[in-house]
Amino acid sequence: MTSQAMEGACAFAWRNYLLLHSGVSENDNRRSALYRYVTNLRDTGQSDFDLLQIAAVAYLKNLDELHDDRAARFAADRVLAECLGSRSAQPDTRL
View 1: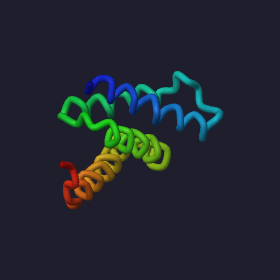
View 2: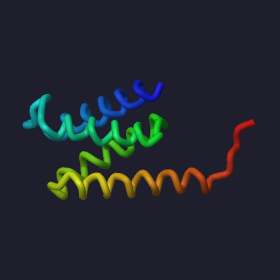
View 3: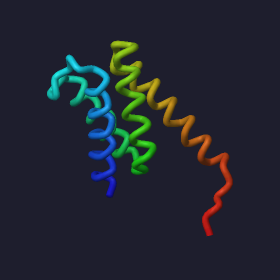
């Protein structure tokens, strides 16, 4: 499932990115950078589809704003950490 979650998160983020940026080619370098970033997250054990989506969208947004891969990764990792923190702060309501 982790590969499917990764692929789905990348596809979701890239599809939405293209909707907002009509002049960007389907094969733009940012797409491969996105896949590298999300693959790295998966390799470190992150497999939650929702969190991978959030991180992927945050990465692309920050890549555009910061124009630097390392800074975009750091900013997206910070967003991911905040999401993980808010999830752990919520009580588990499952039976």
